[in-house]
Each structure stands twice: as C-alpha cells, then as structure tokens.
Image 1 (tube, one colour):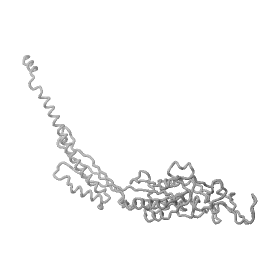
Image 2 (cartoon, one colour):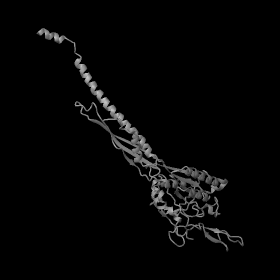
Image 3 (cartoon, one colour):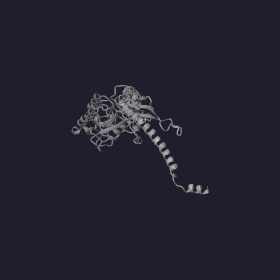
Image 4 (cartoon, helix red, strand yellow):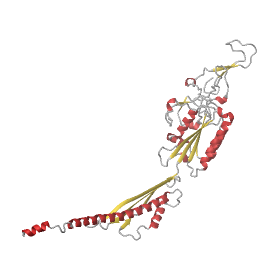
Length: 409
C-alpha cells in the first residue's frame, strides 16, 4: 500500500491537465470579453460616423433644411439597426444655435448606443451590456471683420496728387473687400486726420470735453464743426479711451508763422481743427456707397499727426466703444466693436494711409482757452508817413491772433 502511494507521487502523467484547463478557461473568458467589446465598438463607431456626417450637413451655412430633419434623414438612410440583434441605438437629440444669425451655425447631436453581451453576461461575469454616450458637434461661420481706415488728409497730401492717389487706393480697398462680402459681415470706418482728428459733434458728445468755448453768446456751446479733443500722453498705452475723463478741446487757431519772424501767416488751411472741411470721422458702416462718398469728400489741410490718427482708430475699434455704437449707429452695428474672443470670432484691422512724414504740432495751451486772450497782432491798413518804432499810426488796427477761436477779443 505504501509502495503504491509512492509510485503515484512519482508519476508525472497528466500533471499539466489542471494548468491547461485553467488556461483554456482564461482564454474563453478573455476571448469572450474581446468579442463583446468588439461587437460594441463596431456599433459605436457606426453610430459615431453616422452622427458626424449628419452634423456636418446640418451645420452647413448653405443648409436650408431644419437641423433635426437633416439628422433624422441621415439616420434613416443609415438604417443602423438593420440585421443586428442585441443592440439599441438611442434617438439622436439635436441642439442648434440661433437660426437668425446667417453668418454662424453650430449643431450638436447627442445619443447612446447599447450592445448586449454574449459572454460577459454569463454567471461568472454578470455584465449584461456595454453602453456609451455618442456626441458630435460641428460649427461653421464666417468671421466678422472690423476695419478702420486711418487716412492722412494733411496739407502735404495735396502735393503731387498724393491725396487723389489715396482716394483711389481707399476706394479700391472698400470695393474689393465689400464686393467679396456675400454675408455682409465686414464693417469699415474712416478716421481722417491732419494735425488733429475732428470727431464730429455727435461722436465728440460721447466723450467728456473740457474747455468748451463760448459761441454766439452761449457759454460752453462749442464752435460749430470744431470737435477735436486733445489726448494726454498717459493715454497712449492702451487701445480704449475713457468716456468720463475730461479731454481738453483743441483750440481753433491759426498757429503757423514764419520761423523767427513776427509776420503772421493768416492761413485757414493750417488750422489745427479746420471747420471748413468735411474731414470728420465716419463711424463704421457696411454701406459701400456711404464709404466711397466719404472718401470723395476728403480735402487736404493742416499738419500731419499720424499718432493721433492711429490713436483714434484704435479707440474706435476697441470693444469699449460698443456703447458709442449702440448710441449712434443702427441696430445691425450694435454687436460691434466685438469683444475679443467672442463667438463667432471677429478680426480687427486698422489700415493707415499716409505720405509718411510726421510733424510736431503747435497748439494753444489750456491757460489761453478761457477768458480774454492777451494774444494779438498789429496789421497795417494804411501808412501815410514814416512810422516811429513802438507807436501805432492812424489807420492801424488790432485784431485777435485767433479770430475764429475760443478767445474773447
């Protein structure tokens, strides 16, 4: 008996049987899991691909059919459940963006897919089914574009036909851009500049002005067609401009005179903020006709202050100017200037045209913008005999140095 037991212990036949049975069982388990996962993934991918095709068609800006109807039609044509058992496809739910916006469309589809298991549902692994959400989103839009044309209309532009060439270039730009704007998403504003930028009364009243001159016996009335504000140096480090901080009004003055001479040059074309021209700011518009008419009306006068032209161009394209647009422009412009990073995205562009020569600008300091001005000149009317130095002769008269400005003679 003892010998039989010892022989049994030394016998090696069949020693691998238990190991083989264990390996076979594990192969069946993992093989079954693989089959169930493969079946589920095949159905999920079929669902995802159908949704991707449907959402792309529904989000197209050229799509005239309702988004839900487009998606339902794609799923009907795909017939995902045909010939398949133990699988359920959820009804797709469509979420659409505002259909009134012709420049932007966003469509999202949400659904689920459930695949019942062959092997994983057995007693040793009670997983009845595999289920996953399926999501697909597509969007299409035309970027909105905001353009500010900053145009040099200084006196030097009248030489050698430069202003005429600028007008041709500016109108060609407007025509090229707007003719390609089939969605009407491009707005263009015009900031003419010389020694100053004349805002026009409506735009100037959106800011806080200091040193408004009297006119026609009315205090703080402001001179008609003279609406130029002086911007402190400290406000050139950001694009927006405060609407509450007081900005001094620029004086209407003929400041030009010969170097080292007491002889004045009475030249209206050198006024810092010339009311005799139509060089006022045109706030952004989508009308090509209005833009080209404004460009045609520009005339050259005065000095060249490129920095002020660019400064106002930046201020009027900054999103802080939105309140101004809402106050002065029609409803179609109330979404501009757009906030950076908004959807749909907006490109902001400033195009500056100049002959390239910047000048230092003479101006009247604030102390001489109120009260009686001590500045005057002597103009000879008639001279009947030699004059004596320092003495006014009959026929001479005094007149203010700045006859049309904010000074009280």
